[in-house]
Image 1 (cartoon, rainbow, N blue to C red):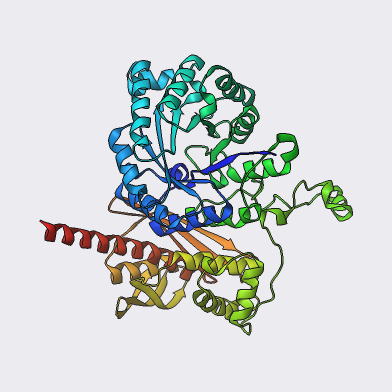
Image 2 (cartoon, rainbow, N blue to C red; image 1 turned 60 degrees about the horizontal axis):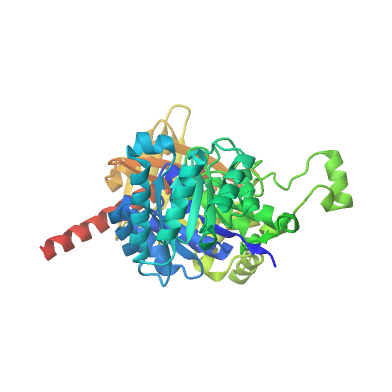
Length: 516
């Protein structure tokens, strides 16, 4: 019987820290559902003490996720732990993950304490967390650069205090695989109570070795791997969980371990995270990159024709990648769209069929034939929108010349439809001037990207913007065959997010005043 390696996902915590704009609660919940379907064992949903938004996200995810253990991060500080527990208490079972630095440079220059003080703080944190749950994880931050004697002392003390998982992070991605595997091996040899805890690893990719270090640790006895989808994370990122999952699956006989990951969910989970986080995946990325299963060399193609195993050690289907072209047109009905979504592996809860079909018909009228990548792009975009959007674009007309452009729009603002026209140095600039005037929001754009979704000149265009409003950053995305319309949808996505945030703030303020 093979040992299980627990998969601990921190996309929503460590991964989100690297994004240009924070995810909304709805977007985080959508990712959490995808991680649950993927078979992730533990979802680190956030750092509740860091902000009210993070607290709300953790609480929402803890309330809705049932098949994965929801976890929250906290420093080795009493208030952090109490707030983490408060956010998680809606779940039937949960994990508190508390940490403190253990390397010499961190202890001396960051914490400015003695090592005995650090051990005392770590022990106190674990004991406090155990008052709320018996599932407590303790991390030795920067363990990769911690003297082994000190690391052994800390691990032993944390286990005695009640930690049931001990995490050994290579926080700055400094160690080499044989070095990191050796650290884990020494812990098993030197810590007398090591059998009472699961050893976990959390490796960063600063030198491009996070996955290799994680696998070296597994071979040395670690039985939990922490990472993110697509390797998102601070600086150069984290260990890519899709790579860990496929390494263990592909080399299972050699490694003697297995995971609970549903591998056929990897592709769409990766794509969803990339879409919602506005973080494109490089084409040559292992497992999920666009070129991961492509073969251009004549020698390779000849081998593939004769036997796919000549140049493929895993199949596209094993990660849920289906290359089937779908012949859908404006004459196709709802049943046909649903059938093709079923073939692609999506279930009813992943999308709203009414919304998807309405968007499908609009697209089919414009480009004729609709393909699988079109349907997926429409689904992800629809999931980003809210039925109760206050601002909606009802009509758009653009006249563009070599010097300036004129744009006219009709914008639904709540129950009222308003009209506006503006001149700009391009159609998008003119459209944005119209939207600013009608909504009353003046927003600074930090980033504006246009990318093609699909193939050919009639493919969908996606606009992604990062906008700054009163010191807060917002991500907006829009999708349409017309790139000007896509740009407008992206801005309205941002403005609707701002509008909702202001409405919630007003309600909270009113409730606070009434309480007083």
